[in-house]
Image 1 (tube, rainbow, N blue to C red):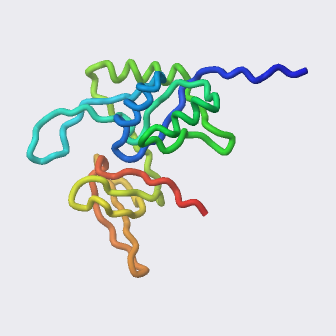
Image 2 (image 1 turned 180 degrees about the horizontal axis):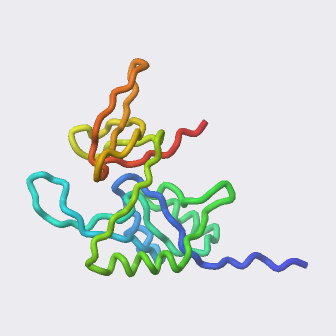
Image 3 (image 1 turned 90 degrees about the vertical axis):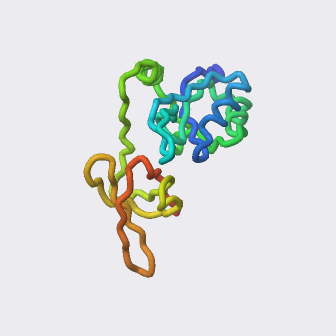
Length: 176
């Protein structure tokens, strides 16, 4: 006779709609779920302001601690702005407690933190800020510090544009 599976709480990554990190964080917190949204202080992108604002360390993502019982899993996915739990074909993949603890320590310090978006040639991207906001294209390459080249295909030809790295977001691959 086999014993029933024991559900063990672990940290998982929740993918959110663009700019819905705080909404999902609040929604999950109200459901009494342990959540973590790492934030860093960055200069405001608005040209008329010189403010420092708190922005998500990983735009579009936050962490939730759950044992993935079916009811709780469904409640996470029903949260306004939540898209999915990050995983593979077998299901959501947990993040180690050590990784989350390390992130908590990092964001609690005043030290500047840099992140790597890890764009690879051919990644589908969306420009989310600036005069080119809304443009979708293909990541071509990095050009100097904090600059990227995005190619846009139209009429069978490519046009390339240089954009601030922070103004570009990776899009999920097109399902075939």
